[in-house]
Image (cartoon, rainbow, N blue to C red; front, top):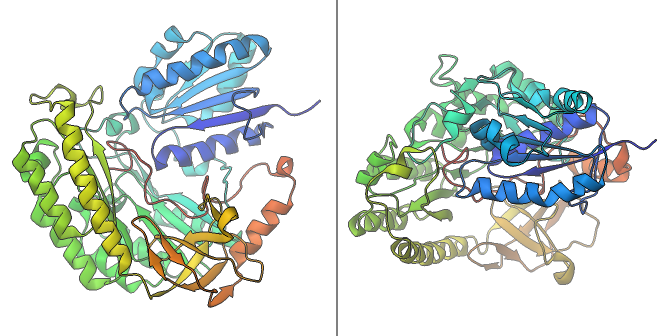
Length: 495
C-alpha cells in the first residue's frame, strides 16, 4: 500500500513560509509523503496556510476551497485543512462556508494538525481547534526544509506593537522569545548538516529580548552567531526602527558573518501619517538610523516597505515620503497601495483616499524608487563580489548559460557559468560589469570558485530519492537564499 500524499499551500509572510515547513515536517513524521509539484490538489491531504492581511484574503481562500470540493467528492478519504492567520480570525466561519473542510487550526497550535486529521477521519466530522495562546514554541516541531544550504531560524513569535494597519499581533499574540541557547543550538545543528546561511526571523526581530528582560539580547545574539564555526552568512528580518539601537549597528559592523544588508520598514515619510499608523518613530529618527548604518557599514544595501494612500494622507504627506526616499537612497523598496484590512483600526478611519489618487501617487513613487535602485546598483559595477549560488533564482539561466545567486548584501547577481561544476550553496567570485534596477550582471569568466559544505549538502540531498526524505530537512523554501521580503504589507514582515 502506497503512503498517503500531502500538499501545503502557503500565503503571506515569512512566518507563514516557515510554519509551512513545520506543517510539512509534521505530516512527513506522521507517514505522509509530499505530492508532486504539479499535483494541484490531487493529494490525500491539502493544507491551506492562510494570511489575513491581504484585501479579499477570505475570497481567495473560499475560491480555492470551492475548486477542491468536486475533487474531494471523487477522491474517497481526501482531507482538507485550513490553518494560519485567517483560520485564527474566522474560526467556525470557515466550516460554515465550506462544510467539506475537515480541519481548522490556528497560529498557536500547528503541532496538532496530524492529530486533528486523524480525529476528523475517525469521527467523520470537521474538527475546529483554535488555541488562544501559544502551546509550544514552533521551533520544537519537526521541520521539512526545502533547501540544504539556507534556513530560517525563528527567534520569537508574536508582536507587542499596535500599528493601525496591522491585524497580525491580534492573531499571533504577544511577543514570546526563545532562549538564546535554544536558538544557537538550532543554528549549530543546521550548520552541522551543511547549512551555511541563516536568517533570524521574528515579527519584530530586533525587539528580541523584551520578553526575557535584556534590551541588548539581539545584538548579543548577532555576535554569538559570529562564533558559530562554518556559518558564513547571517541575515535577519524584519526590524522595527523603534528598537534599532546603536549596539545592534555595532554588532552588525563588527561581526564578519553578519551580512551588510538591512531591510527596515519605513511605511511613510510623513510624521503625521506615522502617528496615525502608531509607528513610534518619525522621519528624522528613521533617516538617522540609516545614516548611522551607512557610517558603520559603507556598502550596506538598505531596503524598506512603504504604504501609499494611508487614510488621511495629503499631498504634503506624500511629498514627505518622496523626500525621505530621496534621502534614504534605498537599494530596493516594496511599495504598496493602501487597502482596508478587516479588523484593523485603519479600516474605519476617516479620510479614506480615492483609489485613483492612491494609484497616481503609487506610480510617482515607483518611478522615483526605480531610478534610485538603478543608480544604487550602478555603484556596484567594477566591484568583486562573492556570490552564493542559488537554486531557482534565475528564470532565464538556461537560455543565457548563466547561473544566479546572492551577493553578501543580498543583491541578485547573474553570472557566467564557470567551466567547472558548481552547486547551489557553493561560492563564486565575480566582477560586476552591468547593473539593472533589480539585478547585477557579471559577464566575464568567474575569478574563482569555492566548493562548500553547503554545496555538498545540496548534492547529497538531490542525489537521494525524493520519497526517502522524511522528517527534518534543512533550508528555505523555493530559493537558496532568502528573498529580501515577500510582497506583503501589514503583516509579519512589517513589524
